Every structure is written in C-alpha cells, then in structure tokens.
Amino acid sequence: MQKTENKMILALILIISLFQLTFYFLTYRYKIRIPNFVILILVLIGYYFILPQFFYPKPRTDGINCGMPILGINLGFWIFGTIGALSSHIIWMFIKKKKNALEKM
Image (cartoon, rainbow, N blue to C red):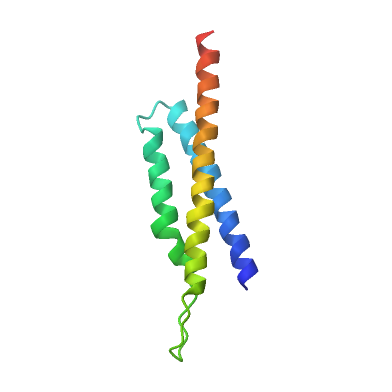
C-alpha cells in the first residue's frame, strides 16, 4: 500500500507542476496581471499545508497510532513538491526570457 501512495504523490506533484507551467503560460499569453512569484507561493502553500492531509492514513481504533507515515508524507510533499515547484518556475523563467528575446527581434 505504501508504494502505491508514494507513486500517487509523485504523480500528483508532476501533474501540479504541469498545471503550474500551463498557468504561467496562460497568464503570459492573455496578459493577466498575476506575478509569477504569487503563483509559485500559492503552489508551495498547497504542497506544505493542503495536499499532505489527503494522504494521511486513517487512525487505528486500538489507540496505537504511529506518526511516522504522516512524517514521511509531509516530508515527501515538502521536498519533492518544493523541487517540482521551483524547477517549474525556473524553467518558465528561461522560456519567458527566450520568448521576450525573440519578440524584440
């Protein structure tokens, strides 16, 4: 069960990174005035505070609940989510810089 959850978390991070790039492109294309760092911060808030709670295991009825799975899920989202969000942001900055250079020619 744990390996399936890990794959789901990584797939979710990949999908959110693609949505992040798409949102950057749409705001650039349609000249929507949302700064790129605001999009990055909103994605990071989602990774840190919102998304990990959907993957927490159900509490056991016998009262013995270990916090290690919760810690692993949080760290997974924090580490891989931050890497995914920052890499998507950096990739977009390079793409945008290249598009701006081509438009000036």
